[in-house]
Image 1 (cartoon, one colour):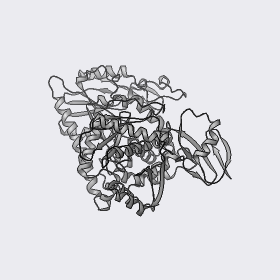
Image 2: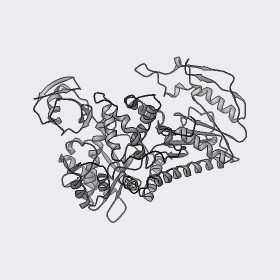
Image 3: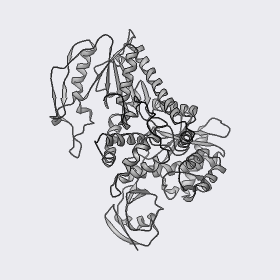
Image 4: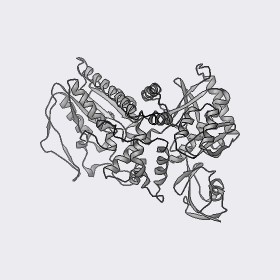
Length: 559
């Protein structure tokens, strides 16, 4: 008999060898009082599907769709239902699950004859999805040799999955069946379609929007938020991916194996520089607009987007346009630490807008815009107090002021300045490349890996510490950054197609340092598994001005 400890209530019970997690949950369920439906579990801190069978003593924690790994299990399973339904209704069609957007996932759907998608088409797919869910159709996992898996997908014309599996370096490969439909997913699914009670499907632009449960309350749908600018930024990147023939991880791996890594890096960097030049030229044009001249550039984005390097590179291009950029730090306008807002747990909430004396900052900006000399404060991070040391500031006739920070697009920060004098930039690493047509890469993973590597290299935090802080970082972004991203004049995508191949080289040993007995091991294990889909390459070809250098080291910029 096995001894299984349930971490939800710290109770241990005995089970026969080979017992599934579903059966284990049924035994513990009466005493757990779970608020939301369980969708998966963590076994010794590693995510597993509920059909996983136990053959040794284990710690088990049952999770719902509020947990990051549980949410991924739910969404993956829902994507498979969508794929099967679309195949059943429109044989020969193609479904591309591209990226998260507007409280769901945007999907590009192509009927066999490339006819336009109609509302009736969407209704028919919805009806078939509901039939599959009502039938509680089981998801069946098959473990096969990689050669056999390649044959299965080759016969069905799935070149994206063939390339991914062929270059994964694995001896055995898992794939899934839902009825007679086969697909590949890089993580576990729920046991059967009946688990998927909350979902929606709508038309969006020329594709589909798969709506998923709210991450705080899985019993209701996520709120729908219109994000036309974000969609266009994704769409622009997808168009370039197609031009470069790099739509998925298999494409990247094949290009690396053919010896094209250096070329891919050069083209990716050139595309980013081209975009930065275009932004600088637009600022220059509007700076010289006699009626509504730009004087203030505001730059924001979530953690590890590359804001600092972007700001440096933009400044270089503005100088090349004949402007004189000055960076202005909001850090010096922090309120004294004793006046900093606090979180419910009593810790300081440094991400809160009230951490900044935005009224004083606004007054100073207004005076600077008028050409006045302003004495600005300096924040002493040791004493936690703002000091006045005689530091003065004045803008010249050819000066443009740059403010970079998490609150830069929050209207409170610069409300004294007319919008006509502002140019707002939003930057993020919006990963458009996918593992294959049905396995997207969460944009947060790109940024989390960057942050783990940077924190470790600087000696600031271990991988375990960075992962443990990430949830609160994302919650702050949801509150203070993302609500304002659509107000930007321009969006900049700092993700590179070749990036994960480079990050793997740096991240593997760092992530491997997270011990199995730590709660953070689950995330470290998932990231390691994900990174191993990419063939690693050296960063020696990454230029010193690259945004990636902000995270892997070797930047020529001083931060």
